[in-house]
Length: 155
Picture (spheres, rainbow, N blue to C red):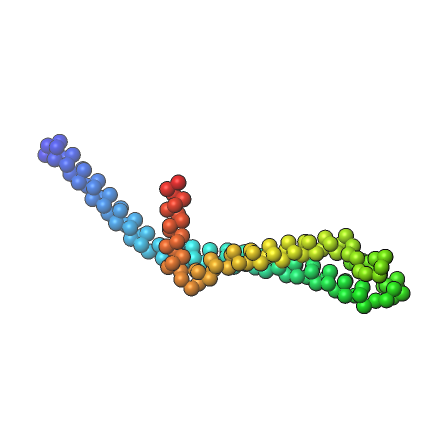
């Protein structure tokens, strides 16, 4: 047997092993891709739901803060001057003409309530679409996700 024959047999043997390894890798990936896609969908759906819950929390905080200001204003309007001295209201005080004037506490609470409320609503509207898209049309979401990955990779 010549050196050329031995070299040729060695090259053929290496090519056969490479092809067998590639076939094994393809079989492994074919089995794992559905599991990966399922986990990817679950992860992004849950991440979106958590963001929505954070938005709901901010919205509730904003509503509670606004409610405190409104309740304080209504309580002050319901009290007479004598009753107001017995039950002081830290949210509003009586002005020089008897009208309700907001205190710094009520102004801060009102502004923070507005920020929390509108921020929470915007957060909910921004984050709710991804979980809905994953639940209703997962294939469409996967195509869009692949397009985003391709755009990121090309940059």
